[in-house]
Image (spheres, one colour):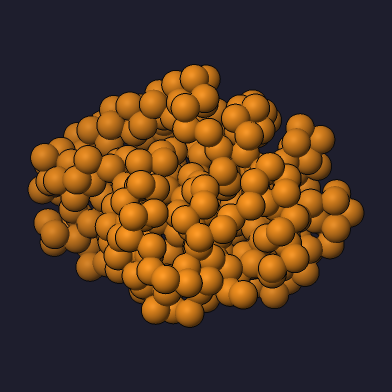
Length: 282
């Protein structure tokens, strides 16, 4: 089985609709795909209805948290979207994404970049607004050549001239909310120094004590040394090790399936989430 547990659609900051993500997942030879849009389960119904034969869907989302002023992303599998407290927090995060996006657009305009909030909102198309939408608007305005250029100190990278912080959960509380809803949590790309910060090992250990289920070890932003260190850390903490492409469609070069999770780790994770991912499950 080929299992990719990290992907995004137009329900957040991916470029392909959920149905297209499912089609591409099967075309990439995947047997299981998790749709993990930022702070929302909004794409799950469309994805489930569009499942090709032979592909199973795991319902999930990438929940936003913050530790010591740094962003922490938590892949949350099989959460109950109707859980009142979790749903309320996800709504608060999405609402603040709008405030933040509008503030970053104002800063960019002050810096001479001809972007508007209407352009960004149109790119988000009703999905959870993220910095990639702003980056795409900047490309359309001719301020930068590629979306990746937006994420440095000159623009909307952490600490950048147009960067604005946003509301996010304490990671331990986020883990508890997902667990209480019946889901399991994996720490996303914990070794990705290219994102500006690596979460310390002692912080990961504390999250393991709070109920963290696993670490995303096999990720495109992790090199061989990152993977070896994280695999050893996960083993010492009794955490599941997963893999995922973190595909965002055009933004990442349609890379579904470039990183995968072993069937044994997948079964372990689904057991911790209290469910099994059969066709259309989740």
